[in-house]
Length: 332
Ligand code: TRP
Image 1 (spheres, rainbow, N blue to C red):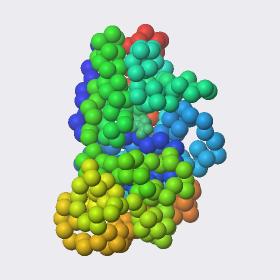
Image 2 (image 1 turned 30 degrees about the vertical axis):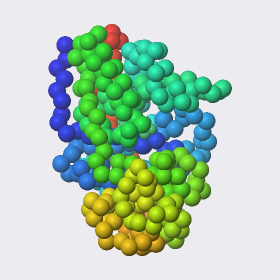
Image 3 (image 1 turned 45 degrees about the vertical axis):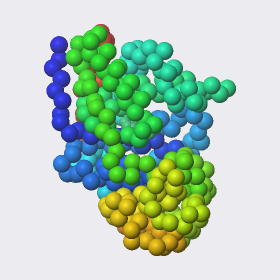
């Protein structure tokens, strides 16, 4: 039996390139990934294979994959501390995914909320059904122990844990069983036009309530100035009764790292709240947008960064895949 050790503090997460990244992706994910450096050993990838589980356009997928990868670096992921790569550059993901399809049960995959929501449509791709196996492979290949995801992904990480435990029981100790790392501040940024919904990158590119990381300052200011508020005209943090205002306060709070009540205390009107919010968002995104433009200006540099990331990822993933194949009875 192979001895599996848990490398403490190894963090892993992926973002599916299904739209231009939003302020929510930055505050809820990328910024946290970057802040964990250098203490945290991180693996962060663009989950391009996951963007093919629903009808997709090949050119748009290619463009979004490049854009997302460049934004990872621009947001501060440093190749010295973090391994940043594109999922499809590491074939072990697909290989292990198949082994996990041979571990998962049809019943448990059918119970996944995302599948239940989208799976009934005519023309549903088989990959939408098996997608949690690919996601489990993403995680298990890196012996990850912390997997920060948004709440809608908790169920998939739970399934990954179940599959790892089952595999270890059936075939011997092979995988590190990961834990869920819950997001702290601003885990959830809501859509400015519909504060009941999350700010989603896969919303229509022109959606008025979605701030993209690459939106120019005037567009950001306009979207925030049109954000839904309420008729009470009191700046106060009350997510249940004032979701629009609380969302704006939450954005400012996440950026300035103050409690939302303190942010509210300093502001007299919704107009002022929106001005401050636009100001801090623009200020936060400006340096990221500059680094992004620099990276796009030298595509060879981005390519080299991603090639190096993929090679480090393969080095980590291949022995784990070999361990799993051997455990299941496949020849060396
Ligand atoms: N499925 C995740 C999402 O839609 C992205 C993802 C793919 C992921 N593989 C992962 C997240 C592995 C964490 C770990 O948001």
